[in-house]
Length: 157
Image (tube, rainbow, N blue to C red; front, side):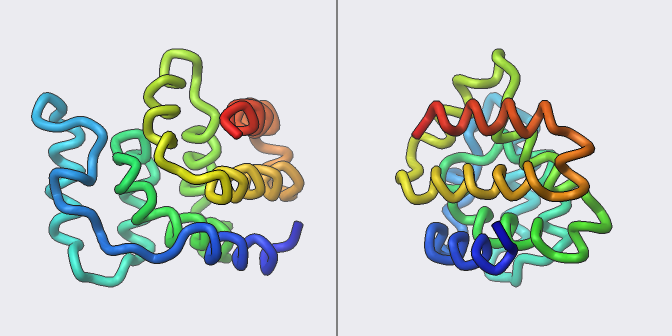
């Protein structure tokens, strides 16, 4: 699978949507300080271009995003993972792999987060992981994590 095919699939599976309302950005509401910090950070980004800095911030906060929050960021985030800049920093792709292959204790939350995705979007995420599986860096660096993520995501199809 080449980058062009995956970029086209990302574009057709994840249309650009406006940022959700502040209260709809995160999976948890008032009882979670981490989600509160995330909402406040993202609110400052409202109506601005999504930059590499925003994506870098979000790499470690993916589990805090709601379904709507993920649908908003994924068109940008997944495309970023295919750029030379992501090849340099690496964390964004690595954490997406981890997010899509959660450990057992986090699987229910991740399933709930992905429950609003349609089959085309879920297939695109599987294809992203298949791209990682054959990528020179990711296939060497975290093959077990990619396999866990593929197994988890295919189980949701």
